[in-house]
Length: 434
Image (cartoon, rainbow, N blue to C red; front, side):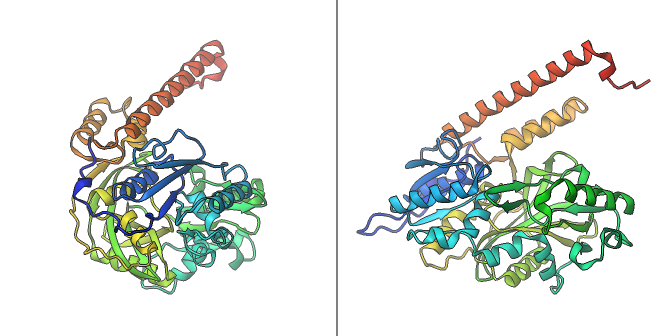
């Protein structure tokens, strides 16, 4: 399951008399950060990998020249900012590249403070970042574009929640304006699940009131309500410069975990000029600089509806790189002050399995009900698709991911055995299905 890139054939960073610029890549535990580390490290860039633990995919990569363990921003993001600023002040770092949703938000909102150390912070300024991160702001902007969007309603435009729900297209989604909200020193993260989907006006009103009522950090940051658009999740990922797209790649989700809709487990490369045109219009309206993912829902009639914009590196960035669009390297060149471009050519119909951990989770979800078909589909992907983590020249991260997966699986099995034991001792806890 190798990474099919051949690092020896790739260009390296330009040689100069000065030491090569040092880059700090945050969020070193995940596959996206690992891909950034590999792309830069293979070209001779001095890469420090940062994370909340020394045990992480990027942290154990051979391309990590050094490591930096920082406080978890989810617990106390102000402490994280202070620690990061002190690290940058004490070390000669050319650029900081945040990868995750959390670190991108925090680094954007404290960009000016962090850049006082002399390091570049490779994320948009908060004014622009929030236009994409805040779905309410994003869909206000999109309303003036020639890009299809679901019907979207916001609380401040209505007298009360009852008026908000009246006549709303159903089914609908009560959608958080952003995944993470900074409140005091805390960072609150809200994830959409089945509770957020409603099919009646009464359910919409009740769900909205419950979500806002039990989450005080949502006061003043109330969710939007959006029409549910059925279809297939697709995306155009880009590197942009002040709204001009310099490089782009498109993908669709073949399999997700959970199967009802979630993170990509298997992806396929594609190209559609209509989706590209829509993505370019959105990025242009945002005047975006840097990497971003523009996500759409493709309906059965071939239309694309804007769903969200992730103004950061995306989880499936290894797929684009494997297909020849090396976003981390292009982004690094941009940070150096150059204007890199990609010719737009890449193979379509290629597939990538995100083995760790989405497709393993998908297999666990489906194998009991459909053992033959799910094992067959999983096996085909394992044997013939590209893979996001394994690489011949950097084997330790895959070994670590395999070990971590085994630990997580054993814990889940132990929890299942414990629950079955509880059910056996207390028959009243088992639902009566007769």
